[in-house]
Length: 150
Image (cartoon, rainbow, N blue to C red; front, side, top):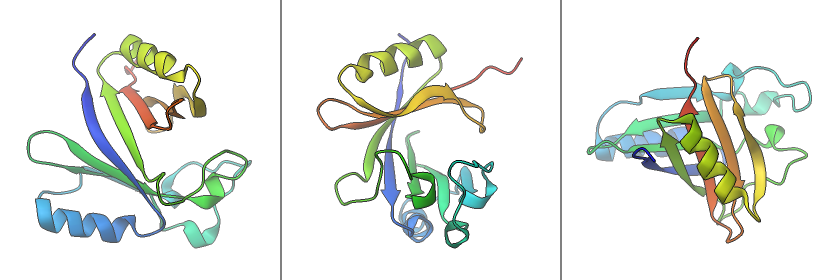
């Protein structure tokens, strides 16, 4: 297996931008990625509530040493019909990013045994193969790998 990058991933209930502005003031640097909810493709099964348009779908703050602090707001209109809602205690994930699609599939498959899968490992609009699950011990995981461009 190739080396893995392990990054903390935090979930906020509408104040991710405020939190990350604070973290940037502490750690320095600039955001390497920032995407608001209204910048994502429309999903007719889970339309975005206009009140949530400015919530962060994803933000990244590179940290000294090479890790990345990542987060998003809980976007409630996207969570209807799946087992995902904001509550203290479910606000942290272990995010693993690999350089190898076979490694991402192996890790996701292994962690899926006895798990609750919130998002099957599949291509996403931002260019990654991405999956999310809560393992049988209650630990939340996000697995991703950049998809190769044809």
